[in-house]
Structures are given as structure tokens and as C-alpha cells.
Image (cartoon, rainbow, N blue to C red; front, side, top):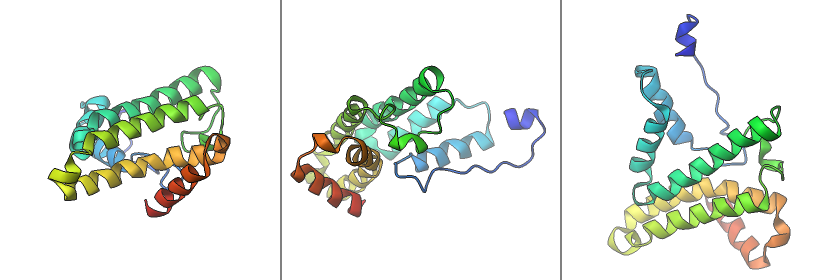
Length: 168
């Protein structure tokens, strides 16, 4: 809407796809595309709708994961460090990605994985698809844990995270 108000006829958006963190690329594409067709739609409604369809049984936990990151970033950039970079660029910032914050994110991922666990028996194909989608976003947690909070990890946890990192 702002671009239209200023007479723009073309808009290009660059994502953080080359970052070391998951960044809900699919959701961003969905929301931006929907808004390009109808600027009166509500961003949060679109994002929530995406979560419901993309993560299915894990949607509530992934919505909470997303809100945790979004709200933390809004708070951090507004109150703590207005000149900070971005959610991907701040991945090496131990103040932003504090141990407590990273563990909250991990809890949301654990909740999402627990929500889809019954599908492993009833619909293995759906389970594998949803697990992959969730684990992609888990890469942020892995990276932050390994980079900033490795002292809290056991060798076994580190090994498991390396396997997940390589696979997803």
C-alpha cells in the first residue's frame, strides 16, 4: 500500500535465504503474493492462514514459534538496539539470541514435533513432510545453540544437531 501511495509500479523483495537461520520463506511468499493481489488483506490473518495449511497439526506450535521470533525482534529493535541489523543478521548476537530465548524456540519446535507424532503411524507420508518443514525452521535453533550456547550442550546433543543440520 505504501508503494502504491508513492506511485510505485514495481517492487522487488530480497529475502534472507542465504542466512544461517530458517526464515519462513514459504510463508513470506504466500503473504506477499496475497497482498500483491489485495492490499486490504491483513498480514497476520494471512500468516496464520498459511500456518494452518502448511504445518497442519503443528500449526499452533509453529505459530507460537513465529510469534516468539517476531515479537522478540520487534522488542529488541525498538527498545534495546534500534540500529541492529535483522533477524538473520543478528543470529550471532548473544543478547538477541539469549540462551533463554533459544530454549523457548526449541520448546516450540518440540511442541510442533509432538503434535505431528501420531501421524507417524496413521499417515507416514504426511508426517515426513511436516517434520521436514518443522526441522527447516529448527535450523535457527541449531545454529544459535552451536554458535552462542555450545557450553550448555552434551556431545550427544551436538552430534544429533549436526546430523539434523546436514540433513535439513
